Length: 331
Image (cartoon, rainbow, N blue to C red):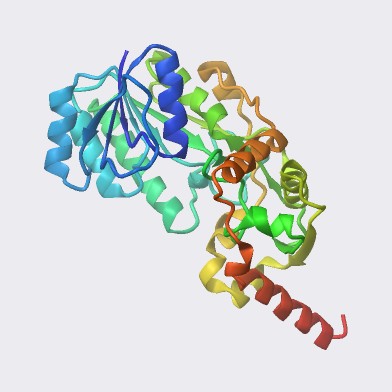
């Protein structure tokens, strides 16, 4: 099949490109040509910034037709509108990369299914909801045959498992520094390796049974945040982490500039029923967190890219403020 990937060099899309090439598809990527990741042999690149809408639309039309177009970088309503115009009449299938954050939080029932109503907390999620609505409307008009895939937290080489404050997570664990956990650490969080997630996209591309449907594809280890940090620490050879629990609403007041993801996402249980993706896309969760985190760390260590946590004192200072407050309260 002839497949166009809008993006193609990010964490997830790099894994998709490799998997499609392994399936003997003819793969073309369209992007600005600025990413450091190299493309496999035989993959064609169209250098184009989708912000230039007229040029973007010409590039899609003139290099097609496409059996499938996978849009990995549709984040804003204007980008969804541009994609809908660009692929109209030039693709047998359009696959939008959305997010599980489009669902309302908390869920009406757990685990989440694709029937969960739209919600979306925060700018990223609300923009994704708007993008989905635009593309579903185009699908209803007959302008494009739409499939939507909603990944959850994804990690891999070059992008590690989530820590609520980001930063030099591996080094922090290795040095035995305290790690802040929102709430009591008991909410659930599933991570999925990019190589596993890629198989969902491969299973969707060219699959007529996916047209007009949405699928989420997420991690299947329902791990609490306390367990998450303990597993990552074990995977990279760090000591058991010293976890400091701070209520989410307190974190939001102490560090509003760095806690939006905690408030909008991390505090809620994120557990999902992947039955639809397993049955229709052939999705399988095969890389447990302890193995995937070890791969991530080993790759960073091999290239000397393990960031120094001493360069960002934010978390240490926040722990100190919290512990001073507890001491003052006699706790």
